Image (cartoon, rainbow, N blue to C red; front, side):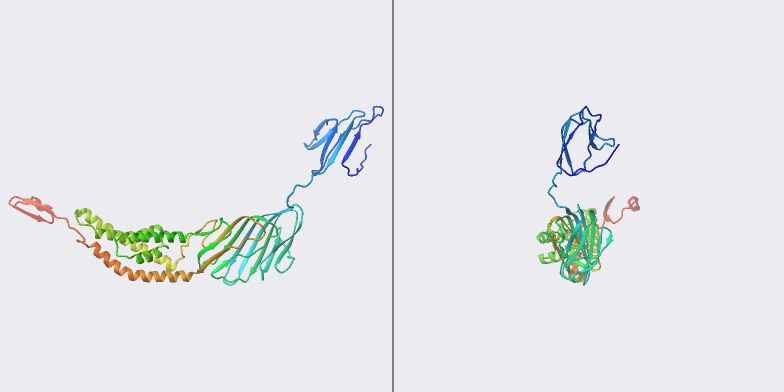
Length: 403
């Protein structure tokens, strides 16, 4: 005989085995849901695990034995029922408008409604919840949606009428929950010259151009005190400003040929013919290499892209990335200072015109330095013959000729 019944939800159960006079033996087995906690007082269990390895205590009482079962439900641990584990804000800036994509990763214990605040005059393009496009709810400055239990990815796309100017800021977006691992990305057109960036995090882009410029200024001031070249302090500074766009190797060649010619001008002329001529050849090659480095620098500056040296956090010259460990609600606004590329081209053109005028005087000085005390020393052999002495330019086959 078997039957099924339902017991009322109580916090304690008292089980008593039938007496020995009854021809009946009982076996007590317990299975509890995960959110219930059972404690037993009385007889020990015959076994604690069932056939499948799950927790299922079984008791085999003797007649008249008792077992008390206390049933309790542990209180919920303090914490949020919904968390925002990651968020990525990508802004693609155009000339007059920009497209923004917000990707959020939620983990919810139970479903509920969430809302994300958007900037004013933002036009919502699409809303995707768990891979399905849905209609947003809420006011004009927010996007409302319903989350199912579990892990869910929400994608919001909207457009802003924000023109590109000297200062460009990321959109002001208010998240519905405190978030971690938040990334803000700003993509600029390729025809922009980035001058400075700022964000409320150390994990952001940095413009290394200004550090390189400060180093060049210090080196230019130091070179102006050597007096090896006719360049004044102002000329060295202007020369160094243009060489900021050159690679370190090209900048070194562009400076070395001037210092080499200045060093050649101060030589006393006591070197041997072979050493003197080899030095002249090396100076000519160094001058050609320096002029070639200047030509490549001018070409890349007038026709190529500026070397702003933007780095840090995965940033490039056209994509700036800021990473925030924790965000209370609103994504911090970051900004970038940039100018059109033709401003950089005009500055390089002005430097090229100044350099062309200055090179006329520098090359004249360089030629005078190279020919100081003679440009080349020919080899001569002194022969001593019986009855006469003389100096002949060649001691070839005539060395054995009789007088």
